[in-house]
Length: 71
Image 1 (cartoon, rainbow, N blue to C red):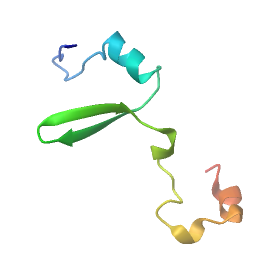
Image 2 (image 1 turned 90 degrees about the vertical axis):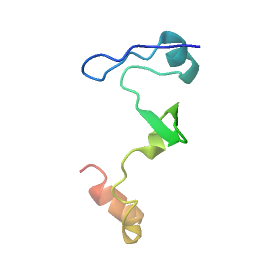
Image 3 (image 1 turned 135 degrees about the vertical axis):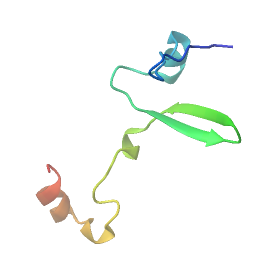
Image 4 (image 1 turned 90 degrees about the horizontal axis):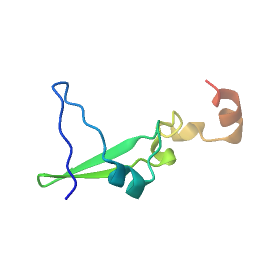
């Protein structure tokens, strides 16, 4: 079992074996799933990032992406 301590600021370091197993690099995002008292930690996929066009399906055209893609 791999463990780490929680600081007084509720922070922890992800142990090296876990970082290696998930191929984590500085700046990567981590996803958490809470399931029946357990937490599953995974590397967040790039496609899980906020997409302003995901909510509004009427803004899915190539023209919209070109016009608003750099905002």
